[in-house]
Length: 246
Image (cartoon, rainbow, N blue to C red; front, side, top):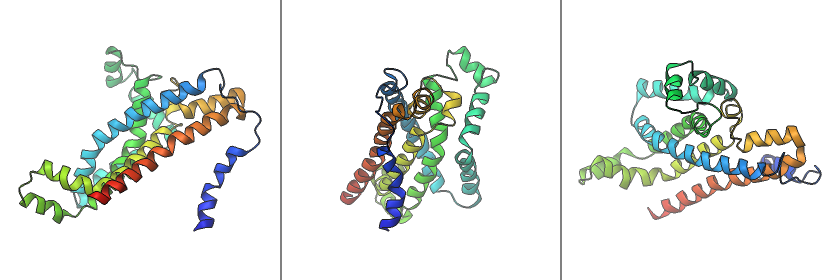
C-alpha cells in the first residue's frame, strides 16, 4: 500500500525540479492572479449550477430501475466519455450564431464564446455527468426501508428527503461534488476552444509555457494544485464528520 501510494504521489516531486527562478508574474504582469480569480469564481458558479440541477436528476435515477435507468445513464455516459476537445468543438458549433439557439442568445446579447458565460457553460457540461452518476450511487445506497418508515411516521416526501435521504447520502454527495469541482477546474481541452478568454488557470498555464517557459508555469501550477486539492478533501472531511452525528 505504501509503495503504491508513493508511486501515485511521485509526480508531485516535480515541483522541486530545477527549472530556474520562478516568475510569479507569469507570461505578463498580473496574469497569474487574474487566472486564479477567473478559475475560482467561475468554477464555483459552475459547481453550484451542477449541484442545483444535478441533485434532483441523481435522486430520480436512484429511484428508477431496469431499462429506464439504463437509458438515462447511457445518455449521461455519452457526456462523460466525449473527448474534451471534441466536446469543445461541438459546444462552439451547437451554441454558435448559425444555430437557432445560438442566434437567439446573440440577440439577447449573450456571448456564446470567449466570455464568462461560455466558460461556466463549458465547465457545467464537462462536470455535470460526473456529478450526477456519483450522486446517483450515493442516493441508491440509502436504504429504501428507512425512507418508507419515515413516510409512515407522517413525514411528507420532501421532509423525508431532507431529514433522512440527504443526511445518509451526504458522504457520497460530497465525493460527487469533489469530483465535479476537480473535473471543472482542471478542464483544458474544451475550454481552450470555447473560452480561451477569460483565461482560467489551465489555459494560462499553457500560455505561460509558450511565452515564458517553465519558470512562469511553476508558480501558477502550484496555486492550481493548492486550489484543486483542498476543497474536495475538506468536503469529504465535513461530510464524514456530519455523518458521525446523524
